[in-house]
Image 1 (spheres, rainbow, N blue to C red):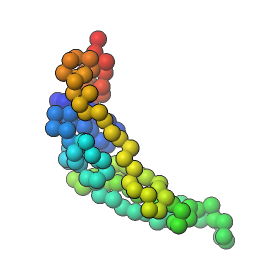
Image 2: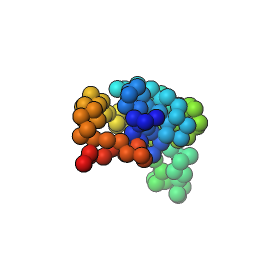
Image 3: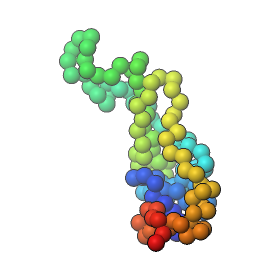
Image 4: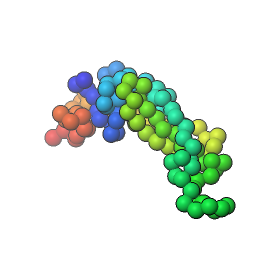
Length: 125
């Protein structure tokens, strides 16, 4: 994909189609104007499974599931773990990556920015 930006370790952005893709397998994860996590598989982990108690008793140094939940996000195409979140119960999934696609497209078209051979954005010289 020639106009693809490597946004995160396992997440790419196809600027032309405005779609998120898995960096590992290329699976289309969803609309780049929306939260990419909506297109991933979500597994909610038991905090005590991830952080087992260190000692017996009331204060175990393990996260309390009434106070925290752990969400893991996986690519539906290849099963690659893309992201993990620690959230309070009831809190919506974090929308942590929002790119101004219109501005990005203008800067790419004008030559202010370019995408190098590794999928990284560079200021044009």
